[in-house]
Image (cartoon, rainbow, N blue to C red; front, side, top):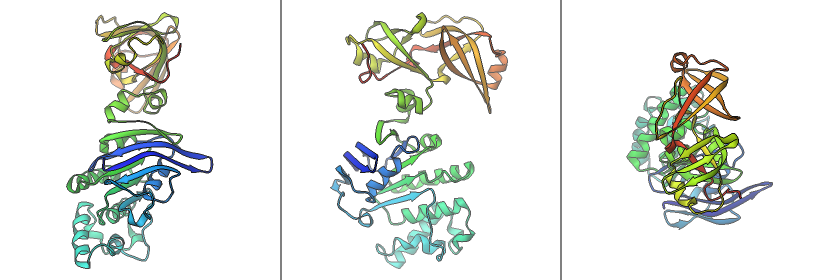
Length: 367
């Protein structure tokens, strides 16, 4: 691992980072998501050295850096409101951090290169007060990257920007990372940053990292209920396993509703376990709706009544009551019109057994 954090704990008043274990490969882009107050920014600021660890180690490129001052850790950090020096123009702001590392000739060459990538080469002479929000953030990024840090920490760097500017800067960051094999650790609330940038994603809450995996795994195969709720799975039910083998489990929900799961990654872990109460999760977009019954051995099919309809932009979220269990499904507006969606209407819903994920497979069983 290029960045390796082991059993890291930090106590700040009543808030604790608790036994954080995290590793990044060189050139990897890892995004940490989580609610406000979960400890994302404190994690970054402990890595760079603004806070001291009470326990655990931080290694960068094989070297323990716990006791190294922030300015000597070879780590860059970019904030949402990264303050530029108002008495300097764009060129001098970018050059500031590089003066102790490179010669004037080297600095000029590097500024020309990074400013072209960040598309600010035409404003190097400009005063900071004349810059747009996007230009300020691109200047901040250029200032962090010019010193060629071993890793760049990003703390909500795009949240103050409009959607169009975010997209442009995201593409620039991708280019920088690819061209320079730069390693990034980025914390955010914005799921678009995950989809557009992340090689892996972690979900954090209350000072702990609950899951760190590929984007697909975290969003489609959450490990516990918190992760499932946070990434928007929404359909989470407790049930009792009535039958199980290595290929499928039959789960009975309350009021007799029966669902089949073929989540083989978890089935192997719980096979033979005599504790049979589990949580299952189904993403709203995995559910298909129809006005007629559709038979398929590979699909679960249920019939329910529509009890609520929420229109949001181009999509329609519908709540369906199936024997007292409320399922949430997602439709396009045109699909909702074709199905003649309305409250109190009975409708069929189907979803693949592969899309029924088993949560808390070895953490939260109940007798």
